[in-house]
Length: 507
Image 1 (cartoon, rainbow, N blue to C red):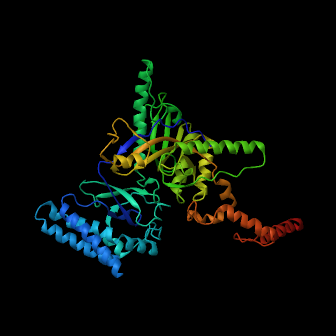
Image 2 (tube, rainbow, N blue to C red; image 1 turned 180 degrees about the vertical axis):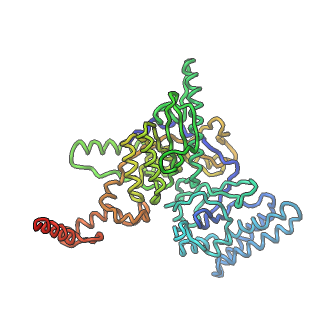
Protein backbone atom coordinates (compact mmCIF):
# COMPACT_ATOMS: atom_id res chain seq x y z
CA UNK A 1 0.00 0.00 0.00
CA UNK A 2 1.60 3.23 -1.14
CA UNK A 3 1.61 6.25 1.10
CA UNK A 4 -0.78 8.96 0.06
CA UNK A 5 0.98 11.84 1.69
CA UNK A 6 -0.93 14.14 4.00
CA UNK A 7 -4.61 14.70 3.28
CA UNK A 8 -5.94 18.20 2.84
CA UNK A 9 -6.78 20.00 6.09
CA UNK A 10 -10.35 20.54 4.89
CA UNK A 11 -12.21 19.92 1.63
CA UNK A 12 -11.63 22.75 -0.81
CA UNK A 13 -14.17 23.93 -3.38
CA UNK A 14 -12.48 23.14 -6.66
CA UNK A 15 -15.32 23.80 -9.09
CA UNK A 16 -18.86 25.16 -9.05
CA UNK A 17 -21.42 24.69 -11.80
CA UNK A 18 -22.93 28.01 -12.94
CA UNK A 19 -26.27 26.35 -13.69
CA UNK A 20 -27.33 22.85 -12.68
CA UNK A 21 -30.69 21.13 -12.29
CA UNK A 22 -31.74 17.95 -10.52
CA UNK A 23 -33.79 15.15 -12.01
CA UNK A 24 -34.30 11.39 -12.35
CA UNK A 25 -32.48 9.16 -14.81
CA UNK A 26 -35.09 7.47 -16.99
CA UNK A 27 -32.65 5.63 -19.22
CA UNK A 28 -29.17 5.83 -20.72
CA UNK A 29 -28.63 4.66 -24.29
CA UNK A 30 -26.32 4.83 -27.32
CA UNK A 31 -23.46 5.39 -24.84
CA UNK A 32 -23.67 9.19 -25.13
CA UNK A 33 -27.36 9.97 -24.55
CA UNK A 34 -29.64 9.88 -21.51
CA UNK A 35 -33.28 10.71 -20.86
CA UNK A 36 -33.82 12.66 -17.65
CA UNK A 37 -37.08 13.68 -15.97
CA UNK A 38 -36.27 17.00 -14.30
CA UNK A 39 -37.59 17.84 -10.84
CA UNK A 40 -37.84 21.59 -11.27
CA UNK A 41 -40.92 23.32 -12.71
CA UNK A 42 -40.97 26.48 -14.89
CA UNK A 43 -40.39 29.52 -12.62
CA UNK A 44 -42.33 31.78 -15.02
CA UNK A 45 -45.66 30.01 -14.52
CA UNK A 46 -46.40 29.56 -10.80
CA UNK A 47 -50.12 29.21 -11.37
CA UNK A 48 -49.61 26.51 -13.95
CA UNK A 49 -47.19 24.74 -11.63
CA UNK A 50 -49.61 24.72 -8.72
CA UNK A 51 -52.44 23.54 -10.91
CA UNK A 52 -50.26 20.83 -12.38
CA UNK A 53 -49.20 19.58 -8.94
CA UNK A 54 -52.77 19.47 -7.66
CA UNK A 55 -54.06 17.80 -10.79
CA UNK A 56 -51.21 15.28 -10.78
CA UNK A 57 -51.91 14.35 -7.15
CA UNK A 58 -55.63 14.00 -7.80
CA UNK A 59 -55.06 12.00 -10.95
CA UNK A 60 -52.58 9.71 -9.21
CA UNK A 61 -55.01 9.13 -6.34
CA UNK A 62 -57.89 8.39 -8.69
CA UNK A 63 -55.77 6.03 -10.73
CA UNK A 64 -54.65 4.19 -7.60
CA UNK A 65 -58.22 3.84 -6.34
CA UNK A 66 -59.52 2.64 -9.68
CA UNK A 67 -56.54 0.41 -10.35
CA UNK A 68 -55.74 2.32 -13.56
CA UNK A 69 -52.33 2.71 -15.12
CA UNK A 70 -50.01 5.46 -13.88
CA UNK A 71 -49.30 6.50 -17.44
CA UNK A 72 -52.94 7.55 -17.88
CA UNK A 73 -52.58 9.77 -14.82
CA UNK A 74 -49.44 11.27 -16.30
CA UNK A 75 -51.32 12.12 -19.50
CA UNK A 76 -54.09 13.83 -17.53
CA UNK A 77 -51.55 15.81 -15.52
CA UNK A 78 -49.70 16.91 -18.64
CA UNK A 79 -52.96 18.03 -20.27
CA UNK A 80 -53.84 20.02 -17.15
CA UNK A 81 -50.50 21.82 -17.30
CA UNK A 82 -51.04 22.78 -20.92
CA UNK A 83 -54.53 24.17 -20.18
CA UNK A 84 -53.37 26.09 -17.11
CA UNK A 85 -50.45 27.62 -18.97
CA UNK A 86 -52.63 28.57 -21.91
CA UNK A 87 -54.94 30.49 -19.54
CA UNK A 88 -52.00 32.35 -18.03
CA UNK A 89 -51.85 34.72 -20.97
CA UNK A 90 -49.09 35.69 -23.41
CA UNK A 91 -45.42 36.03 -22.59
CA UNK A 92 -42.86 33.60 -21.19
CA UNK A 93 -45.58 31.60 -19.45
CA UNK A 94 -46.97 30.58 -22.85
CA UNK A 95 -43.66 28.86 -23.60
CA UNK A 96 -43.73 26.80 -20.40
CA UNK A 97 -46.36 24.10 -21.12
CA UNK A 98 -44.00 21.56 -22.68
CA UNK A 99 -41.50 21.65 -19.82
CA UNK A 100 -44.24 21.77 -17.21
CA UNK A 101 -45.99 18.85 -18.82
CA UNK A 102 -42.80 16.81 -18.73
CA UNK A 103 -42.21 17.57 -15.05
CA UNK A 104 -45.77 16.74 -14.03
CA UNK A 105 -45.89 13.67 -16.20
CA UNK A 106 -42.60 12.46 -14.75
CA UNK A 107 -43.88 12.89 -11.19
CA UNK A 108 -47.09 10.99 -11.89
CA UNK A 109 -45.64 8.27 -14.07
CA UNK A 110 -42.47 7.62 -12.05
CA UNK A 111 -43.70 4.34 -10.49
CA UNK A 112 -44.86 2.93 -13.81
CA UNK A 113 -41.71 4.04 -15.59
CA UNK A 114 -39.49 2.60 -12.86
CA UNK A 115 -41.27 -0.73 -13.11
CA UNK A 116 -41.00 -0.77 -16.90
CA UNK A 117 -37.36 0.23 -16.74
CA UNK A 118 -36.59 -2.52 -14.27
CA UNK A 119 -38.52 -5.18 -16.17
CA UNK A 120 -37.01 -4.42 -19.55
CA UNK A 121 -33.51 -3.61 -18.21
CA UNK A 122 -33.52 -0.25 -19.93
CA UNK A 123 -31.07 1.21 -17.47
CA UNK A 124 -28.88 -1.89 -17.34
CA UNK A 125 -25.91 -2.34 -19.63
CA UNK A 126 -27.29 -3.51 -22.97
CA UNK A 127 -25.97 -4.73 -26.32
CA UNK A 128 -25.55 -1.17 -27.54
CA UNK A 129 -23.16 -0.54 -24.66
CA UNK A 130 -25.26 1.78 -22.59
CA UNK A 131 -28.43 0.69 -20.92
CA UNK A 132 -30.87 -0.14 -23.65
CA UNK A 133 -31.32 0.76 -27.25
CA UNK A 134 -34.86 1.50 -28.38
CA UNK A 135 -36.07 1.92 -24.82
CA UNK A 136 -39.52 2.01 -23.34
CA UNK A 137 -42.10 4.27 -24.93
CA UNK A 138 -43.35 5.50 -21.55
CA UNK A 139 -39.77 6.30 -20.51
CA UNK A 140 -39.12 8.20 -23.72
CA UNK A 141 -42.25 10.33 -23.26
CA UNK A 142 -41.36 11.69 -19.81
CA UNK A 143 -37.64 12.39 -20.28
CA UNK A 144 -35.59 15.20 -21.75
CA UNK A 145 -32.71 14.02 -23.91
CA UNK A 146 -29.34 15.00 -22.44
CA UNK A 147 -25.72 14.48 -23.43
CA UNK A 148 -24.01 11.71 -21.45
CA UNK A 149 -20.24 12.42 -21.51
CA UNK A 150 -19.26 8.89 -20.49
CA UNK A 151 -18.92 6.16 -23.12
CA UNK A 152 -18.10 3.43 -20.61
CA UNK A 153 -20.56 0.97 -19.06
CA UNK A 154 -20.91 3.08 -15.88
CA UNK A 155 -20.88 -0.14 -13.86
CA UNK A 156 -22.83 0.06 -10.63
CA UNK A 157 -24.49 3.38 -11.50
CA UNK A 158 -27.34 2.17 -13.72
CA UNK A 159 -28.80 -0.47 -11.41
CA UNK A 160 -31.12 1.88 -9.53
CA UNK A 161 -34.26 2.76 -11.58
CA UNK A 162 -35.03 6.48 -11.69
CA UNK A 163 -31.82 7.33 -9.83
CA UNK A 164 -31.36 11.00 -8.85
CA UNK A 165 -29.04 12.89 -11.21
CA UNK A 166 -27.65 16.39 -11.72
CA UNK A 167 -27.30 17.97 -15.15
CA UNK A 168 -25.45 21.13 -16.09
CA UNK A 169 -27.17 23.57 -18.43
CA UNK A 170 -25.55 25.41 -21.31
CA UNK A 171 -26.98 28.10 -23.57
CA UNK A 172 -24.16 27.94 -26.11
CA UNK A 173 -25.22 28.18 -29.72
CA UNK A 174 -24.82 25.13 -31.87
CA UNK A 175 -25.38 22.63 -29.08
CA UNK A 176 -27.85 19.90 -29.94
CA UNK A 177 -28.58 19.13 -26.28
CA UNK A 178 -28.65 21.89 -23.69
CA UNK A 179 -28.20 19.55 -20.72
CA UNK A 180 -25.16 17.45 -19.82
CA UNK A 181 -25.29 14.60 -17.32
CA UNK A 182 -22.79 15.41 -14.55
CA UNK A 183 -23.65 13.38 -11.42
CA UNK A 184 -25.53 10.20 -10.54
CA UNK A 185 -26.37 9.12 -6.99
CA UNK A 186 -24.89 5.65 -6.53
CA UNK A 187 -27.63 4.26 -4.23
CA UNK A 188 -30.41 5.54 -1.96
CA UNK A 189 -28.57 7.76 0.49
CA UNK A 190 -25.28 6.94 -1.22
CA UNK A 191 -22.51 9.09 -2.61
CA UNK A 192 -22.89 11.28 -5.69
CA UNK A 193 -20.64 10.12 -8.52
CA UNK A 194 -19.24 12.33 -11.27
CA UNK A 195 -19.80 10.67 -14.64
CA UNK A 196 -18.28 13.41 -16.81
CA UNK A 197 -15.04 11.67 -17.77
CA UNK A 198 -13.40 14.72 -19.37
CA UNK A 199 -14.17 16.83 -16.30
CA UNK A 200 -11.47 14.93 -14.42
CA UNK A 201 -8.83 16.53 -16.67
CA UNK A 202 -10.18 19.99 -15.93
CA UNK A 203 -10.22 19.36 -12.20
CA UNK A 204 -6.62 18.10 -12.23
CA UNK A 205 -5.62 21.09 -14.36
CA UNK A 206 -7.12 23.41 -11.75
CA UNK A 207 -5.21 21.59 -9.01
CA UNK A 208 -1.93 21.84 -10.92
CA UNK A 209 -2.43 25.51 -11.70
CA UNK A 210 -3.42 26.51 -8.17
CA UNK A 211 -0.72 24.37 -6.62
CA UNK A 212 1.92 25.95 -8.83
CA UNK A 213 0.72 29.44 -7.91
CA UNK A 214 0.41 28.51 -4.24
CA UNK A 215 3.91 27.03 -4.25
CA UNK A 216 5.35 30.31 -5.49
CA UNK A 217 3.31 32.29 -2.95
CA UNK A 218 4.28 29.84 -0.21
CA UNK A 219 7.97 30.21 -1.02
CA UNK A 220 7.64 33.97 -0.76
CA UNK A 221 5.70 33.64 2.50
CA UNK A 222 8.28 31.22 3.91
CA UNK A 223 11.05 33.66 3.05
CA UNK A 224 9.09 36.32 4.93
CA UNK A 225 8.55 34.01 7.91
CA UNK A 226 5.01 32.95 7.00
CA UNK A 227 3.49 29.64 5.93
CA UNK A 228 1.33 28.20 3.21
CA UNK A 229 0.96 24.85 1.46
CA UNK A 230 -0.30 24.13 -2.08
CA UNK A 231 -3.27 21.84 -2.70
CA UNK A 232 -0.97 19.33 -4.40
CA UNK A 233 2.27 19.22 -2.43
CA UNK A 234 5.26 18.93 -4.79
CA UNK A 235 6.41 15.67 -3.19
CA UNK A 236 3.28 13.92 -4.53
CA UNK A 237 4.54 14.55 -8.06
CA UNK A 238 8.22 14.07 -7.33
CA UNK A 239 9.14 17.73 -6.97
CA UNK A 240 8.26 21.24 -8.05
CA UNK A 241 7.29 22.33 -11.56
CA UNK A 242 7.17 25.68 -13.28
CA UNK A 243 5.20 25.06 -16.49
CA UNK A 244 2.15 23.00 -17.46
CA UNK A 245 1.35 21.90 -21.02
CA UNK A 246 -1.78 20.05 -22.11
CA UNK A 247 -2.42 17.39 -24.75
CA UNK A 248 1.17 16.72 -25.80
CA UNK A 249 1.99 13.95 -28.29
CA UNK A 250 4.33 11.27 -26.92
CA UNK A 251 5.27 7.61 -27.15
CA UNK A 252 5.60 5.35 -30.17
CA UNK A 253 1.86 4.62 -30.39
CA UNK A 254 0.78 8.10 -31.41
CA UNK A 255 -0.79 8.83 -28.01
CA UNK A 256 -1.35 12.25 -26.45
CA UNK A 257 -0.61 12.68 -22.75
CA UNK A 258 -2.94 14.87 -20.69
CA UNK A 259 -0.23 17.07 -19.12
CA UNK A 260 3.50 17.65 -19.33
CA UNK A 261 5.13 19.41 -16.38
CA UNK A 262 8.52 21.07 -16.71
CA UNK A 263 10.83 21.00 -13.70
CA UNK A 264 13.01 24.00 -12.78
CA UNK A 265 15.99 22.04 -14.14
CA UNK A 266 14.22 21.40 -17.46
CA UNK A 267 13.23 17.77 -16.90
CA UNK A 268 9.79 16.74 -18.16
CA UNK A 269 7.07 14.91 -16.24
CA UNK A 270 4.35 13.16 -18.26
CA UNK A 271 1.01 13.06 -16.43
CA UNK A 272 -1.89 10.83 -17.50
CA UNK A 273 -5.33 11.31 -15.86
CA UNK A 274 -7.99 8.64 -15.42
CA UNK A 275 -11.55 9.23 -14.20
CA UNK A 276 -12.66 6.70 -11.54
CA UNK A 277 -16.33 5.95 -10.80
CA UNK A 278 -16.43 2.26 -9.79
CA UNK A 279 -16.28 1.28 -6.09
CA UNK A 280 -16.93 -1.69 -3.85
CA UNK A 281 -16.65 -2.51 -0.11
CA UNK A 282 -13.04 -2.99 0.91
CA UNK A 283 -12.17 -6.64 1.63
CA UNK A 284 -8.85 -6.94 3.50
CA UNK A 285 -6.65 -9.89 2.65
CA UNK A 286 -7.11 -12.87 5.00
CA UNK A 287 -4.57 -13.20 7.80
CA UNK A 288 -1.67 -15.58 7.25
CA UNK A 289 0.04 -17.91 9.69
CA UNK A 290 3.45 -16.26 9.91
CA UNK A 291 4.00 -13.54 12.46
CA UNK A 292 5.65 -11.13 9.99
CA UNK A 293 2.89 -11.30 7.40
CA UNK A 294 0.23 -11.11 10.10
CA UNK A 295 1.81 -7.94 11.46
CA UNK A 296 2.00 -6.48 7.95
CA UNK A 297 -1.65 -7.33 7.31
CA UNK A 298 -2.67 -5.72 10.59
CA UNK A 299 -0.70 -2.62 9.68
CA UNK A 300 -2.38 -2.38 6.28
CA UNK A 301 -5.81 -2.85 7.85
CA UNK A 302 -5.10 -0.10 10.37
CA UNK A 303 -3.93 2.22 7.60
CA UNK A 304 -7.05 1.44 5.56
CA UNK A 305 -9.29 2.17 8.55
CA UNK A 306 -7.51 5.47 9.20
CA UNK A 307 -7.82 6.46 5.54
CA UNK A 308 -11.48 5.47 5.47
CA UNK A 309 -12.15 7.60 8.54
CA UNK A 310 -10.77 10.59 6.65
CA UNK A 311 -13.09 10.01 3.68
CA UNK A 312 -16.15 12.21 3.24
CA UNK A 313 -19.64 11.27 2.21
CA UNK A 314 -22.57 9.43 3.83
CA UNK A 315 -21.07 5.95 3.36
CA UNK A 316 -17.61 6.70 4.77
CA UNK A 317 -18.56 6.09 8.40
CA UNK A 318 -20.38 2.80 7.67
CA UNK A 319 -17.63 0.71 6.08
CA UNK A 320 -14.45 1.46 4.14
CA UNK A 321 -14.85 1.38 0.37
CA UNK A 322 -12.24 1.12 -2.33
CA UNK A 323 -12.35 2.78 -5.76
CA UNK A 324 -11.39 0.76 -8.83
CA UNK A 325 -10.36 1.51 -12.40
CA UNK A 326 -11.25 0.56 -15.06
CA UNK A 327 -14.86 -0.65 -14.98
CA UNK A 328 -14.37 -2.71 -18.15
CA UNK A 329 -11.52 -3.98 -20.30
CA UNK A 330 -9.73 -0.90 -21.67
CA UNK A 331 -7.10 -1.41 -24.35
CA UNK A 332 -6.65 2.35 -24.49
CA UNK A 333 -5.75 2.49 -20.79
CA UNK A 334 -3.35 -0.41 -21.29
CA UNK A 335 -1.64 1.45 -24.14
CA UNK A 336 -1.31 4.59 -22.04
CA UNK A 337 0.34 2.65 -19.22
CA UNK A 338 2.85 1.14 -21.68
CA UNK A 339 3.54 4.65 -23.03
CA UNK A 340 4.30 5.93 -19.53
CA UNK A 341 6.79 3.11 -18.99
CA UNK A 342 8.38 3.99 -22.33
CA UNK A 343 9.01 7.63 -21.34
CA UNK A 344 10.52 6.47 -18.02
CA UNK A 345 12.92 4.22 -19.91
CA UNK A 346 13.80 7.26 -22.05
CA UNK A 347 14.95 9.13 -18.94
CA UNK A 348 11.85 11.23 -18.19
CA UNK A 349 9.39 11.07 -15.30
CA UNK A 350 5.80 9.82 -15.47
CA UNK A 351 2.76 10.02 -13.19
CA UNK A 352 -0.65 8.39 -13.54
CA UNK A 353 -3.34 10.34 -11.67
CA UNK A 354 -6.57 8.55 -10.78
CA UNK A 355 -9.29 11.12 -10.06
CA UNK A 356 -11.85 9.41 -7.79
CA UNK A 357 -15.09 11.22 -8.60
CA UNK A 358 -16.99 10.11 -5.52
CA UNK A 359 -16.63 11.04 -1.87
CA UNK A 360 -17.05 7.62 -0.23
CA UNK A 361 -13.64 6.11 -1.04
CA UNK A 362 -10.29 6.68 0.65
CA UNK A 363 -8.57 3.75 -1.10
CA UNK A 364 -7.82 3.01 -4.75
CA UNK A 365 -6.69 -0.04 -6.71
CA UNK A 366 -6.46 -1.10 -10.35
CA UNK A 367 -9.44 -3.34 -11.02
CA UNK A 368 -8.01 -6.81 -11.59
CA UNK A 369 -11.52 -8.30 -11.75
CA UNK A 370 -12.48 -6.21 -14.79
CA UNK A 371 -9.14 -5.82 -16.58
CA UNK A 372 -6.43 -8.09 -15.17
CA UNK A 373 -3.97 -7.04 -17.89
CA UNK A 374 -4.27 -3.38 -16.92
CA UNK A 375 -3.82 -4.23 -13.24
CA UNK A 376 -0.68 -6.16 -14.14
CA UNK A 377 0.63 -3.23 -16.20
CA UNK A 378 0.01 -0.81 -13.32
CA UNK A 379 2.07 -2.95 -10.95
CA UNK A 380 4.78 -3.32 -13.59
CA UNK A 381 4.83 0.43 -14.25
CA UNK A 382 5.01 1.24 -10.53
CA UNK A 383 8.02 -1.07 -10.22
CA UNK A 384 9.59 0.64 -13.26
CA UNK A 385 9.33 4.10 -11.69
CA UNK A 386 5.91 5.45 -12.79
CA UNK A 387 4.26 7.27 -9.88
CA UNK A 388 0.69 6.24 -9.04
CA UNK A 389 -1.36 9.03 -7.46
CA UNK A 390 -5.06 8.85 -6.50
CA UNK A 391 -7.02 11.99 -5.63
CA UNK A 392 -10.29 12.11 -3.69
CA UNK A 393 -13.08 14.31 -5.02
CA UNK A 394 -16.52 14.82 -3.51
CA UNK A 395 -19.48 15.93 -5.62
CA UNK A 396 -22.39 17.81 -4.08
CA UNK A 397 -25.72 18.43 -5.84
CA UNK A 398 -27.43 21.82 -5.83
CA UNK A 399 -29.55 22.56 -2.76
CA UNK A 400 -29.84 24.70 0.31
CA UNK A 401 -27.02 25.38 2.71
CA UNK A 402 -28.51 22.93 5.23
CA UNK A 403 -28.61 20.14 2.63
CA UNK A 404 -25.01 20.84 1.68
CA UNK A 405 -23.93 20.65 5.32
CA UNK A 406 -25.65 17.29 5.66
CA UNK A 407 -24.09 16.01 2.42
CA UNK A 408 -20.50 16.42 3.59
CA UNK A 409 -18.07 18.12 5.89
CA UNK A 410 -17.63 21.86 6.07
CA UNK A 411 -15.79 22.93 2.93
CA UNK A 412 -13.75 26.05 2.56
CA UNK A 413 -13.85 28.17 -0.56
CA UNK A 414 -10.64 28.37 -2.53
CA UNK A 415 -9.54 31.40 -4.47
CA UNK A 416 -11.36 31.62 -7.76
CA UNK A 417 -13.94 29.00 -6.82
CA UNK A 418 -16.63 31.37 -5.60
CA UNK A 419 -18.38 31.34 -2.22
CA UNK A 420 -18.68 28.05 -0.43
CA UNK A 421 -22.32 28.74 0.36
CA UNK A 422 -23.03 29.45 4.00
CA UNK A 423 -26.72 29.92 3.47
CA UNK A 424 -29.46 30.12 0.90
CA UNK A 425 -29.19 28.20 -2.32
CA UNK A 426 -26.10 26.02 -2.64
CA UNK A 427 -24.81 25.50 -6.20
CA UNK A 428 -23.63 22.12 -7.43
CA UNK A 429 -19.92 21.83 -6.81
CA UNK A 430 -16.86 19.60 -6.63
CA UNK A 431 -14.64 19.44 -3.55
CA UNK A 432 -11.03 18.31 -3.36
CA UNK A 433 -10.45 16.16 -0.27
CA UNK A 434 -6.79 15.20 -0.64
CA UNK A 435 -4.91 12.11 -1.84
CA UNK A 436 -6.07 8.52 -1.39
CA UNK A 437 -4.16 5.37 -0.48
CA UNK A 438 -3.10 3.28 -3.50
CA UNK A 439 -3.28 -0.51 -3.06
CA UNK A 440 -1.52 -2.10 -6.01
CA UNK A 441 -2.05 -5.80 -5.32
CA UNK A 442 -5.68 -5.74 -4.20
CA UNK A 443 -7.53 -8.70 -5.77
CA UNK A 444 -4.57 -9.66 -7.95
CA UNK A 445 -4.13 -13.14 -6.43
CA UNK A 446 -7.83 -13.91 -6.70
CA UNK A 447 -7.90 -13.08 -10.39
CA UNK A 448 -4.70 -15.01 -11.03
CA UNK A 449 -6.40 -18.08 -9.56
CA UNK A 450 -9.65 -17.58 -11.47
CA UNK A 451 -9.03 -15.74 -14.70
CA UNK A 452 -11.70 -17.66 -16.59
CA UNK A 453 -14.55 -16.18 -14.52
CA UNK A 454 -13.63 -12.60 -15.39
CA UNK A 455 -15.24 -13.15 -18.79
CA UNK A 456 -13.37 -10.36 -20.51
CA UNK A 457 -14.42 -7.81 -17.90
CA UNK A 458 -18.14 -8.44 -18.38
CA UNK A 459 -18.78 -9.16 -14.68
CA UNK A 460 -18.93 -6.27 -12.27
CA UNK A 461 -16.57 -5.99 -9.35
CA UNK A 462 -18.54 -7.11 -6.36
CA UNK A 463 -21.04 -9.05 -8.52
CA UNK A 464 -21.22 -12.40 -10.27
CA UNK A 465 -19.02 -15.37 -9.40
CA UNK A 466 -15.94 -14.42 -7.43
CA UNK A 467 -12.54 -15.62 -8.68
CA UNK A 468 -11.86 -16.93 -5.17
CA UNK A 469 -15.02 -19.04 -5.34
CA UNK A 470 -13.96 -20.39 -8.73
CA UNK A 471 -10.55 -21.38 -7.33
CA UNK A 472 -12.22 -23.16 -4.41
CA UNK A 473 -14.48 -24.96 -6.87
CA UNK A 474 -11.48 -26.20 -8.85
CA UNK A 475 -9.73 -27.40 -5.69
CA UNK A 476 -12.83 -29.32 -4.60
CA UNK A 477 -13.15 -30.85 -8.05
CA UNK A 478 -9.52 -31.92 -8.01
CA UNK A 479 -9.94 -33.49 -4.57
CA UNK A 480 -12.95 -35.40 -5.84
CA UNK A 481 -11.02 -36.76 -8.79
CA UNK A 482 -13.05 -34.87 -11.42
CA UNK A 483 -11.43 -33.04 -14.31
CA UNK A 484 -12.40 -29.37 -14.56
CA UNK A 485 -12.75 -28.11 -18.10
CA UNK A 486 -10.62 -25.05 -18.85
CA UNK A 487 -10.55 -25.47 -22.61
CA UNK A 488 -8.49 -28.67 -22.24
CA UNK A 489 -8.62 -31.24 -19.44
CA UNK A 490 -5.64 -31.90 -17.19
CA UNK A 491 -5.64 -35.58 -18.23
CA UNK A 492 -5.47 -34.66 -21.91
CA UNK A 493 -2.52 -32.33 -21.32
CA UNK A 494 -0.69 -35.03 -19.32
CA UNK A 495 -1.26 -37.57 -22.12
CA UNK A 496 0.12 -35.19 -24.73
CA UNK A 497 3.16 -34.46 -22.58
CA UNK A 498 3.82 -38.18 -22.11
CA UNK A 499 3.53 -38.79 -25.86
CA UNK A 500 6.07 -36.03 -26.58
CA UNK A 501 8.55 -37.52 -24.11
CA UNK A 502 8.11 -40.99 -25.67
CA UNK A 503 8.81 -39.59 -29.13
CA UNK A 504 11.95 -37.85 -27.90
CA UNK A 505 13.26 -41.11 -26.39
CA UNK A 506 12.47 -42.99 -29.60
CA UNK A 507 14.38 -40.42 -31.64
